[in-house]
Length: 193
Image (cartoon, rainbow, N blue to C red; front, side, top):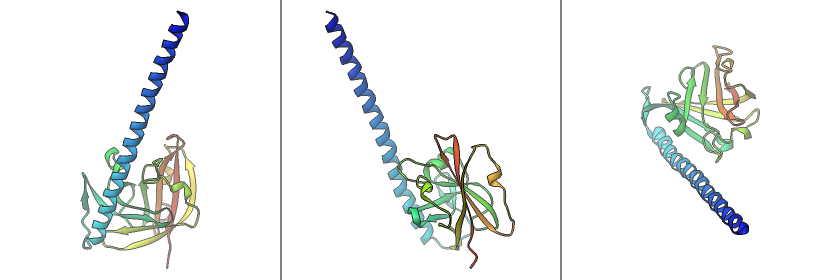
């Protein structure tokens, strides 16, 4: 009798483990499929922006506006940059966290998720000093930036948003790391030609 109760207990435990595993797999698959659909949509939007006539007016995307395009060839990254950082915007693309317009003097800070599947800023940890980042504004001007600093900081560190020199174009990329306990910061500066 005791063995039957133990056997039933093991079976129930095993069934619960299987159910939990299935739920986890479904949630991971849903997230991955959602990211892939989002990637396709962003690719289409980037192409639309590239085909769009030069404009100083923002281009609409969802509930916000696109202010430019970010491209990092080394990690095959290309996204529209959304005007505001909101929970919804962060889910769909790279966003302006602070600063002026794309390719203006000062420090433009962009935020993006560090997705496990490598989408958005999920591959930023592969970048090294000297790598290039390109920003294209809505007037079709593309500026090349070179990475000059990579570090991790506390999520509450706002010093990363400060402009070091008002006469140069600076870029700061911000993403989460270490289970959202730190921020991976990538700083870059315009390459003068």
